[in-house]
Each structure stands twice: as C-alpha cells, then as structure tokens.
Length: 418
Image (tube, rainbow, N blue to C red; front, side):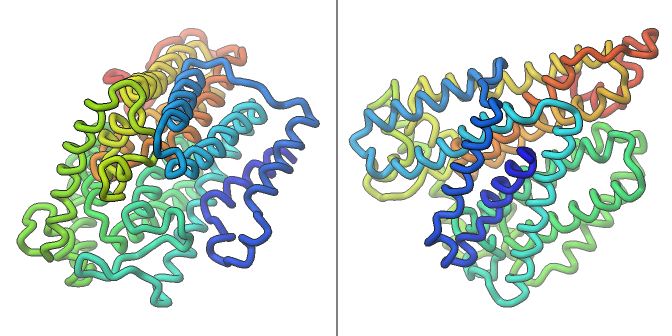
C-alpha cells in the first residue's frame, strides 16, 4: 500500500492535475495527500533517516538553504522556494524509508517513467489542440501544468528523465521492454524538439551521442544510424523550429530577442558574482537574486543561483552532493563484484543512471537555475535505495566471476572515468 501512496504523490507532483484543472486546487490536493501519506508512514513506523553520505549532503544543503532564507532581507520572496524544497526533502525521506528491496526499486523507477510519459502525452495532446507559447519567433510546446510548464523547464524535465531508461535497456530486457524504452525515447525527443529549447537539444544531442558511441560495440553502424535519424528529424521540423535551433551556431538567423536571451545569462552570472562578493557566506537567500539586484529576474544559471543565493557554504554542500553521487556509484560497483549478477544488475544500473544524470543536470545548469529541482533529491533517493539493495547479502553462485568481466562495456567504461 505504501508504495502506491508514494507513486500517487509522485504523479501529483509531476503531472500536477490541480494546476491543469484549477477547481482541484481549492481542495489543496497535494498538501492533503502528503499529510495522509506521512500519517500512514508514521503509523507503520517506517520513517527513518537513511545512513548514506548522500543523505547527509542533501541535509546540509537543505539546512544551509533554510539558514540563508532566515538571514535574508528578502525572506518573503524566498518563502515559496523554501516551502517547495521542504516538500521535496520530505518525499526524499519517505522514499528512502519505505522502499528497501529490489522489487521496490524496480517499481518506483518504472512508476517515475510512467508518470513522466503520461505528463508528456497529455502535454503533446494539448499542443495538438493549440496550447503553446509563441516566443522567440516560433510556437513552443509547454507542459500541461503551470509550475514546470515553461518550454525550457518542460524540456529539462524530459532530458533529466532519460538516464532512467538505462537500467531497463541493460538488465536482460525482453523485446517488449526495449520497445517500450524506444517508444519513451521517441516521445521524449519529439517533445524536446517541439519545445524549441536550444539547451535541451544541444545537451541531449551532444552527451547522448558521445555516451552512445563511447559504450557501443558497433560504433560505425551506430554513428550512421544516428546520422540518418538526425537528418530525418531535421527535415520533418517546421521552418520556424529549424531557424530556432540554427541560432545555436548562428544567432543572426533568429530574432534579436533570442540572442539577447542567451547573452542575458552571461550578464546575470556576472551579477551573481557581485552578489556573492557582498554576501560570501550564506548568499542572499533562495529566490532572492532578482530582488537583491533589482530587476526581479531569476539567475537563469545553476552556478549563478548557487553562489548568489546560498553563498560559499551552499556551494560546498552542493559539491558534496555531486561527489556523494559518484562515490555511491563506485561503492555500488565494488559491492556488485561479489554478488550474483542477476540480482545486482538492476540496482547497479540505477546507481549508474543517477551518476549519468549529473552531467545532464550540470550542463543544463548553464541555461537554467535547477539547484532546488526535485530531480536531485529524487534521483539521490533512487541511488540510496539501490545501494541498500546491494548491501543485502546475496551469495554469488559463480565466485570465479568476482571481477568486472560479467559487467557490460557501459558500466566498465563509465566506471573507469568516475
């Protein structure tokens, strides 16, 4: 029952039906649902703090964010940011408290992808019905909700979900599983193209291609296939969308405001450095960058957001989060050597997928402020659960294989660079 309660909240948080149908918002559906879930967890005695380096890093970043908010002269501005982040932290604790075994892990990762797929399908349907945002000279697809509906934010949500396909593709999948994975991938790429998000497209194309070629056995065949797919997709795009993406290489072919949008991020980062120099320890508080500067805008970069809003302490805690994710993956790889491969593959691949999501989050951070995004903590929870699963003793029926020889090239190659 608890697993389904968690999935229900996950769907509420991603799809946000109370924003799609505003009359639901009058009933405070999300808040009531979380209270019921918390009460159920307390009644079953499942609430606990996970003992993991990553959980302590998240805890430190959360406490520093709260301290920055309390010390900020713009605490009213940042109140919603802190409240929303507290919700994410609460769900993080619930995930790591309730879900403990391999079956739970597979269930929650699958549920996350299903929630994202429903969100994309609903948004795509609304786009077909004429719901879009005309901006930068093109009709840009938006999310069906409000909180994450901005074209760039919606595209980022999709990009971040892609690494979670990896465990299902690598863990001895059936043909049906791989068809579903390819279907999700096709839906995701379609939505990203329709959003017109240049950062999302550039990150997906670059890191996706490098990653695929880096682990593929038949590199030439894969390169040709990717080239054919890219040319076909480009040919199917409307003219205004092609012009939008051409501005990545040649800003002059697009409208002037598109170039201004890209240049403004550099200006905001320089302003963030000035804010940090004046407030080096705690920054000016979550969400307060624009109020401090006076223009009311967000930092629009992860790095400007971190230094301006959380200061040096926040940056250090954030680095601990990134480092914790990679240390967890290294530990998972080490433990899996002495385990039965059939039992260890999926949790190991989940740890790998979370580690691979970090470069996506960091790369997308050049074009968006994602420090308080739920993706960090949710993926951290997935990895902590996967590591807990690997720590459960399961004898290896083939002790002679206590090396990495049974691991596929994907894991060996990535692990070597971790």
